Length: 162
Image (cartoon, rainbow, N blue to C red; front, top):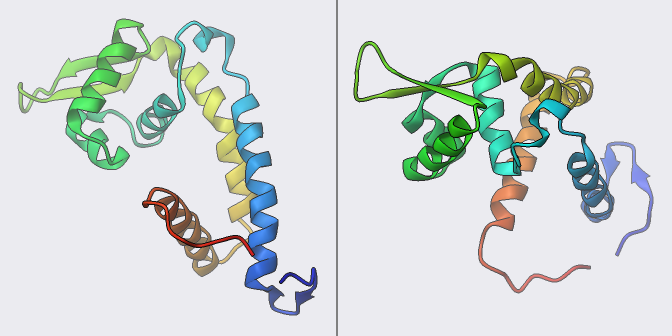
């Protein structure tokens, strides 16, 4: 049961759960309300595209298999997304000069500034949240979010809210 009090070292687990359960819907709502730049509006971009575009923006051009591994989806899924976005002109595809069987994917030059603008607000928010933390604290935050996401994707358990 939550007392609503914090100890000197931080909230109890139950108080932390309460705070995060109330905070997460607000965060998700704000993310969903973030305005897609006018230039990208007509492309019907979905959350799945956001992760793909973020990898290409932050890490540069890469192959479909590498994107699939990073997104933790099948290469066929990434191929479909890449085909869809390249037909719309958001992404460029080219053969790898070293291996002609491999396709290298990148953000189309004309859309790079709009994609960067779209993702920069989230990146800046994370920068402000993570910068004051020590590297160990950053690992804790990232590990906690990854565990939360992983647990949400597991089959329903018999756990109940307290």
